Amino acid sequence: MFTGLIREIATVKSFVGSTLSIKSSYKAKVGDSIAINGACLTVIKVNNDGFSVELSPESQKLLAIQNYKNKVHIEPAMMMGDKFEGHVVQGHVDCVGEIKEIKNNGNSYDIFITIPTNFIAFVIPKGSITIDGVSLTVNDVFNDSFRLTIIPHTMKETLFKNYKKGTKVNIETDMFARYVAHIIKHQNKVSLSWDEVDAINATF
Image 1 (tube, helix red, strand yellow):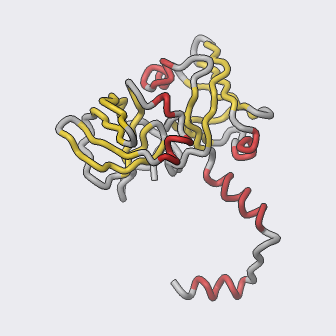
Image 2: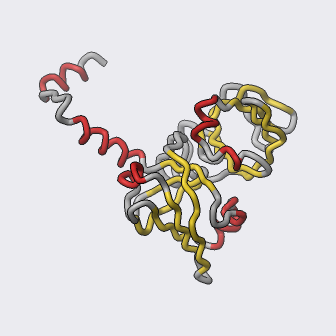
Image 3: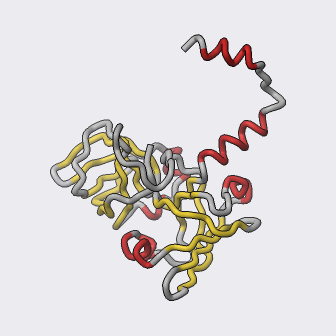
């Protein structure tokens, strides 16, 4: 589990085949889960100046893979007892979005991002969303896009400062919205009485 608060902007040393090597001040261990641009990846090797992770063909197909070069956002997985900030982030990227407009308002930036229409139902006005691993709040939702407003500090301290119209980004929609939609979709297929629920609970 992650929070969507970027802990470091790390440097990509190489990306060969399925192995992504990162230069980072974070001291990782083999087997650690680390979100890189919002995607939860497993550390397979530790180096003197960082670590390496492996991206499966499925991950490479799904992610905005062109962003896994130069600089990337990283966030190590939460540990028991860590202070919880941001929002509940799984590191499971739903889709790739595309920035269609960035509007400088002087004291903030409006960012409009398009995504496949089948994911719009999981984007909730005033709800949370993760863009390349950054926890942000949705302001408006449209037919195939949504609007975020971010403050200058976030723009400066994340890779958003490098983004422009046409930039592809990893999107993780709100986990709870996905769960509710899944339950509603399948509520007619599975029906349990409260006695059956109690019986299932009693087995744990």
